[in-house]
Image (tube, rainbow, N blue to C red; front, side, top):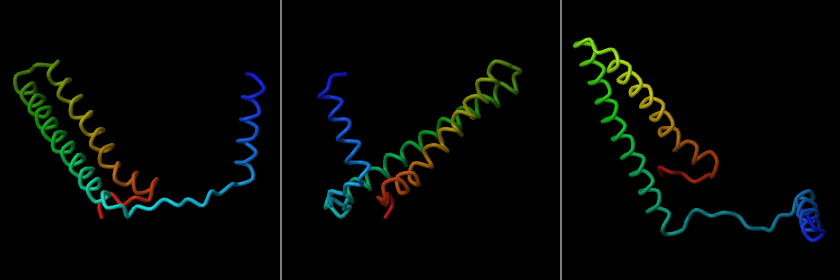
Length: 108
């Protein structure tokens, strides 16, 4: 690292240590924010619908494999259900994470 990079880093750390406030506050009242909230909600809703379809297919594979005695199919069906449940939990928590970390209400 050369002296210029070291000076930039030292200056940046010094400014951060002093608590520099540029006076810029985020505002979420732009005219297009409603569109993005709606779009985000529609994307999350679509992903949840796809997960439900995936989990129904995985459950059908598991049940059919159980009925016909196919051990490998039972394993695949249960793995699909487990993956679907974990994915649904992650997708379901996105709205709360957005609201918590950014202050943007995703669902007004």
